[in-house]
Image (cartoon, rainbow, N blue to C red; front, side, top):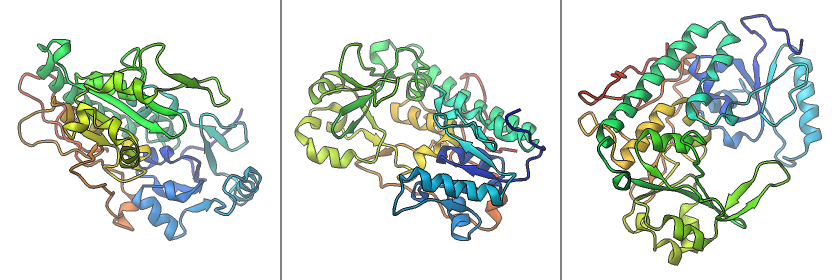
Length: 359
């Protein structure tokens, strides 16, 4: 056996990536996160930040030499010697053969729904499968509610009349990374577009140049001219990064030719701050779907209206932030996503309800 554990697990968790934070938070097990291996600036969770400041969370990081694997390995070994029953969650591409390691590959799932279902693995460590099943069911109901609303609003629309979305961001030295959606479930952004009845522009085969960065996966990038050809007429542009303004200042002449820029319909992913998109967002895929449907005009138009939480209009909305942790009480409470209500259109199908409970 690679790892034999008493259940419920009592030895604490060591996380190595911030996407590993939301599942224990949803289950009310923040205090079981005892250590974090990595740069603490990437932690978005207000309660994890509080725990770090109160020395309830040990950080293994060397700011003066952050890429020194030997230092990190030695410090991790020392921590495990002092905490022999801890579990170290490794990433999908990391070595997970160590005696106290468990590989977490949630980030390798193609869809948001599949990624979220990994909460079951965390729950199994604490005999909380029933709680996890209820969270999954409630979240799925809200997700299906927004899908039903979007379907009701777009069923009779010809494909050419559906909203068009450009999903693209710029990487200095490489070019523009854009959506690739050969199927609706090829990536989470493809899933959201299909969910909301929108046309997401996908990189045509043969367009762009690729990089493998020493691995087996090819990453494709478009030139300025290719991006203009692909996306200049898109109604909406989602720029999944914090760098839109910097890139715009460098490429104003190019970007001013895009319809979405001209109409001020560009959205980035800083609705809850700089790093939360890669952390808290994973706990509320249903809310992200509501956001996407709101942007493309396929959310329920009747009150109460959904207030976007993750996608921020770069022209009219400030960079957001997560509220402070109501410590110490909130540390022990399950995380409940905000704005997680979906009101069904009459005749729109699944009721979904307004239930935001996770227990």
